[in-house]
Amino acid sequence: MKTAAGLALLLAAPALHAQAPVQASFAVPAQGGSYADIADLVVNSPLILDAQIRKVTSLPATQTAGVPANIQRVLIDADVTSLVRGADGFAAKARFLLDVPKNAKGKIPKLQKRRYFILGSKVNGSAGTVKLSRPDALVEWSPANDATLRAITKEAVQVDAPQAISGITSAFHSQGTIIGEGETQIFLRAASGQPISVSILSRPGQNKHWAVSTGDVIDESAIAPTKDTLLWYRLACSLPRTLDPKLVESSEAKDIANAQSDYRFVMDSLGPCGRTRPLPGTR
Image (tube, rainbow, N blue to C red; front, side, top):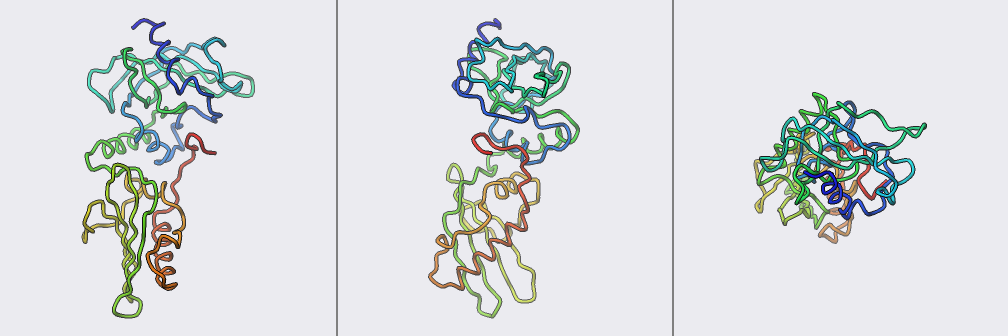
């Protein structure tokens, strides 16, 4: 690949002409990165490489228009150790642009020989060139990050993998035949029209039970998702913390209150998302 041609294709990418966002880091760290931090990158990256950085080249001012003063845009050359996700036959060497925050002295850390997962997509017409999924789409290698990233990727590539959730479409609560018995069902809006619903069952003298179904029919054998799985991530990191009463299909105050209570139970059971890095466009 010719250096000039590959760099020109990267600089021509729409995301790189736009104003670079202010960022605090360029990678999920080797220690301290959360499941959600890594999942945010994996689910949006058709290409994932395990690679070691070989060369770092700072770009001149003429090629860094719009980059904030506290960011250094560099061209990275890396040696690919393995292909984690993507089409077979990707080049043994990778090249990509990276925005690296400067320290108080205006310097960036030494990156040569450091190992990272690179998450992005191929640049058509330039073999081995990668466009990062977002400016900070690197995950520093560590045994923990390696295990987490590969587990998420294994789930994400499945045909029936849980899709992104954009909100709640409706909910209803039905009273049981005895006092203290009832069921709440909550229907969610997911990408690609994937049906997904949450059911919460209450019975006197028993703990509440909740489960998630990802099919057209409510699955009686469904269970609540395990923490740090893709379905857990989709729910914990996408759903609002409270249920809007307007979404409950009932005019009875008691039904609305029960549905909201059951929803809080679900959110408490899921626990916090754990995201430590803001998504692009958020603070």
